[in-house]
Image 1 (cartoon, rainbow, N blue to C red):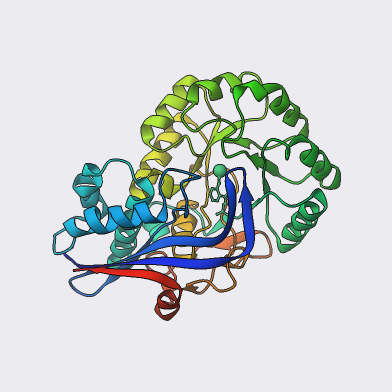
Image 2: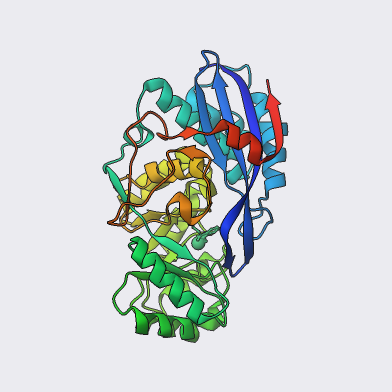
Length: 370
Ligand code: OSB
Ligand code: MG
């Protein structure tokens, strides 16, 4: 396909409620939306769901904007690009790192490819389900009472499993209260790298709560200490921040650093790289699930498609649009079915349409390349 123009939108949308993790509080979602148009006028949409500050990873909305505007998109516009594969053979390979920025373009090229073929993205990538299991990630709250109320409300809404953010001081005591109130719900925790191996006795106390897993307890670069910790606790370790490339999966597997992987397509560079990791995990017998980054409805479409893959064995951090925003930028919005699933669209591409008028309204910066 020949790419005729690319539009970048820096979008800022208010979250319905602040989202607090061990690395900070998010009240707004700043994210980059990518629109790629090819010569016949067909359009693909992507999203680079970076955070405003370098707290989850080193990338920020400004670095993603810079890398996309100054390096990646100029080498694509006016060129013949063999879909997402062509992107990765060219500029996608030349640019080091910046996975989340690259993911924005990779996704738009996948959406475009699927729309040109008249096929849903899920079908195109080998998805095997019509519905995906939805879970919810609940941030750190002011107090336990507020947390218990939130958990109860989310269960009533139909979410299948609850993930709680933890950090030192908001861990064992909180879990004890939650388990007392909800003894049997599927429950897991996410530390976003807030602990060290020296905390292993405290982390071992979490074993009594029958958790599905503990996500990213230690530093993102420390596969060695995760491997040590795995031998000291019985709760399965799931890696998120640590897995940025397929090489991280291989190392984690050989070291025994985790039992489960949270595959966030954006963290690894998008759909192309996500599929490679999915296939490797399936071959190695590492169960995965699809994690989220508070995406808008555009990014959410890619999460839903990825969650239909056969290697996905746990509920995902893919919640309904209403959990994040008062109004989403796609139509229809992503809705939760009463049984806690989200239906996979059958329409071409990600299967939802972008409300371009709203997109303009929530954009704080715009750039057209080409
Ligand atoms: O660690 O999984 C995480 C959101 C932003 C950055 C990191 C994480 C998260 C979530 C939310 O847990 C998942 C979602 O609902 O999108
Ligand atoms: Mg996480």
